[in-house]
Figure 1 (cartoon, rainbow over the protein chains, first blue to last red):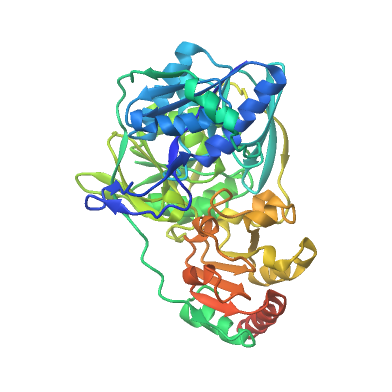
Figure 2: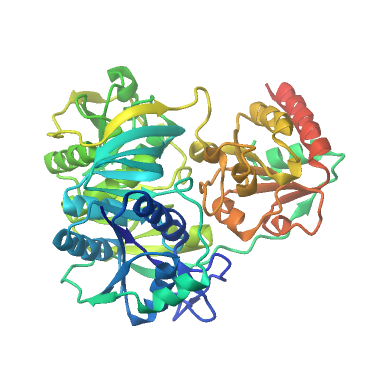
Length: 246
Length: 314
């Protein structure tokens, strides 16, 4: 079984979010980049578990520049067999997805996994786009994935509940919480990652459909209004007359 | 022409009213939907500004590939230039597929109406709620996926026509074995009021007072990550960076310290009330109203005060 896991770099969850160049670019100053947690904790770890149980090969893929190699090595340290970097700036979800779909079509994979979204752009777009570009079924926000031969049984989130679905390979799925538990790479994994193959592939020519033109940060909250814990009538009064939310 | 996709399989929800209201502000709205809703229910979307509803009763409302073909066929039939979804779990599966199929730029997580000057741009939530981005779409057809609770539904018209429509949806590759949706619960992402609690409640047996308060407020219940991780509450109640992101009008949090990862899921809330025994809890910095006190005393007291308020105002 050949599994392709799509990873993206993302700022560490505790990063200060600021913008530069007249609020047109994310300010990377002092920001530590990590593997997007949904890609790593859920998609990659579940792929490794499936490989450990059934055999096969796990390849990670990202669209990025040479500066992203350290993030790719982090993912390799967790246990993937090899990595592919499409050598381009991941300008929008469409561009990114089409690059990955092109590679996946040429190289033939049984399962393509992504995280449910990145923690920086939160678009939840790339997985579905890859599926459409490859004309494959897509299961979004899967919280469980079990394989029996070439049939997958998955649990996915639907509005207000969960749904159990079945699909045959090849397919694309985006992975959410519940899929697997985070793995901390050990020293042997970190050492092995240094020599695992990282293939750099030239990008295909793809249009960009969207672009971020500027950013804002939310207005700072005015300071909190403290209410006497004995006087909840006062809180109800404020919520009704001042905040007007009840 | 504006094409709006709505989920109608479980009745017409608030998010459907929101997207139709949103679409109406951009132009003449045609609604497309799938599944088994009644004509009478669908006609009501006219009251929020739809000119017409097209339904394909053969399309499965939970199959992303069928819905993608349905919306694409409908978009071609009406000549849609803007396609609007509510950014829910269906849209997260369908809108990206449609973007590729139509080669149309997708704005996901929109929180405002687009600017339609020389450039078409729209404001979205990014960095897990810690910032906003303005996204420009370069393609002729644009797809907008609107975050729930970003616009108030507006009643503007009368019932509209409902037509059967053949979306040429093709076959199904993802077989649904079982759907488990608890009855009578308000979907967390659609709720206008959310009552949430964390480890400060000390155990799952103490959630009664959270549920009582939620009942009084007509609210959904939520929880912090540790509480979902140790199994006190189900995962679908977990809000935060790795759980659901919500933006209700009122978010009441008891016994949650307010780690940055939790704030990422809730800082789109219009008003935040924090109840915590620790005056140094970081959540107070993000709150509009704070109560420094024991949730075990404050929650029941707040519930009584609300009941009194409701009795006086009905």
